[in-house]
Amino acid sequence: MASLTLDWLHVIVLLGAIQGVFLAGALASKRRNRTANRLLGAAFPLPFLFGPLIYLYAVSAADRNHRLTRLDALHFVPYGTIHRAELPCYEATVVGRKERKIKRYLDD
Image (tube, helix red, strand yellow):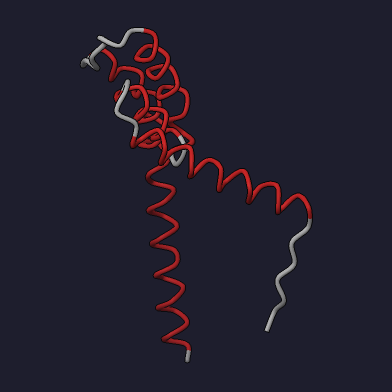
């Protein structure tokens, strides 16, 4: 059985991740300025959406009466474009894995 070793850098990263999860939970459960807190809480597990979510958090935190509109959704267009462009790569990887498994099965 492999042994688990943690050096000081891994411990720091682990503590930062725990802190981020705690902050996301605390922000999601707050009653005041709910929209802004939910946007900031959602930014933690979604690193590619961090920029648009932080921007919308800042707008919502600055103006408590701000409601998210369809125009605000335009900030997510670059993420959708990149995600759509990378989709064939993910599909090719899955198809390649299935083909390798079938080939291994047939070779046995």
